Amino acid sequence: MASTARAEEPEPAGPRKVAVSEFAGERGKELRLALLEVLSEQDDLEVLGYRDIEVVAKRLGVGLSSASDRRKVAVELKIFAWFDADVADDGATIRLTGGKGRQLGTMELAAAGTEAQAGEIREGAWAALGHHVSDRALRVHVLGRHRAAAAKKLEARQQELANQRQLALEREQRRTARLADLRVEAQRKLADHEEEGARQIELAQERIAEENKKREQELVAQRKREAERQRALAMERQRAAQVSTMAKPNGPKPMPAPAPMAGAAAPPPSGRFGDRSWMDDASPATRQWLENRDAAPAPATAPAAPAAAPPSAGGGECPPTVSEATCKWLQSRGGPR
Image 1 (cartoon, rainbow, N blue to C red):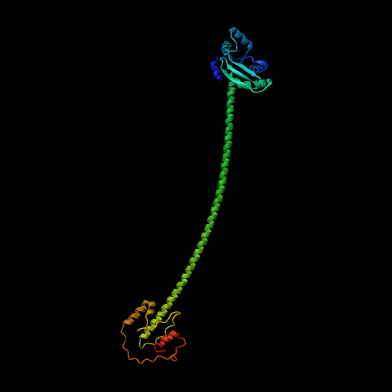
Image 2: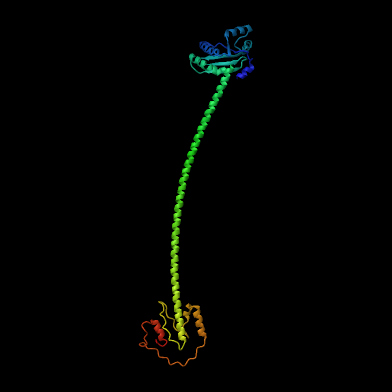
C-alpha cells in the first residue's frame, strides 16, 4: 500500500510531510495530541502545523473539508498523507488518507475511555499506520510480517513433526502388538503341530504293533498249516505203503492202518484197492504210482487157500494198541496177524 501511495504521490526530497486534522470534541483533542506525539518521534516525517495549512488554504481560496480542496492544498504544501479521526461515544477510528484522497489505512480504538484510547494510540498507532508513510517503518513492518509468517511456519512444522512423531509411535505400538499376536499365534501353531506329530507317532506305533501282531498270527497260522500238510503227507505216504504191501501176494503183511484223525471216518474198502476218495488229498507222485499199479496186469498167483471165516464176535481180538477202526479194517481182511 505504501508503494501504491508513492506511485500516486510525488516523492519529496527530504522527510515526507504529513498533516493531522482537528479531531472533534474534548476527547478528540486528547487523542490528537497522543497521535502528534507518536508522529513527532519519527525523524523521517515532517508534521505540518494545522494553522499553517489553514493559512495556505485561505490563500488558495479553498477549505479543508472536501477532498478536492485538500488535493489543492496537498499539491501546494507537498503533503504526503492526512490523519483524520472519527470520535464517537462508544469508540474512535483513526483514518490515514493519501495526498490525493486515496485511503491508505485505518486504526480502530477498542479501549474505553479517553486515557485508555490515548495510550492505545501511543502504543499501536505507528505499528498500525506507520508503514504507509515511512519506508523504514515499511521495512520493519514487512520484516515483522515475514518473521510472524516464519514463526507460524516453524510452529506448524513443529506441530507436524510432533504429529509425525506421534503417528510413528502409534505405528510402532501397533507393529509391536501385531508382532506379539503373531508370536502367540506361531507358538499356538507350533504346539498344535507338535501335538499332531505326537499323535501321528502314536498312531504309527499302534499301526506297527497291529501289523506285527497280524504278522505273528499269520506266521503261527502258516506254521499250523505247514504242520497239517506235513502230517497229511506222512499219512499219505503211510497209506501208499500199505496199498503197495497189500498189492504184493508174497510181500510182507500189511501194517495196521493208522488211527484216523478226530472227526474223520475211515474210508470203506471198495474195488481192487478200496475207495479212492482219499487220493484227492494225496500228492501227485502217489496218485501217479497208484494209477500205474491199476493199469498193470495182475500177476498170476497160485490158487489161494480157502479164506478163513470171519472171526466171531468173541474171537480175533486186536491188540490194545490198535484203534477200533483199524481193527475192523483188519478183521474184514482176515483178522490181525
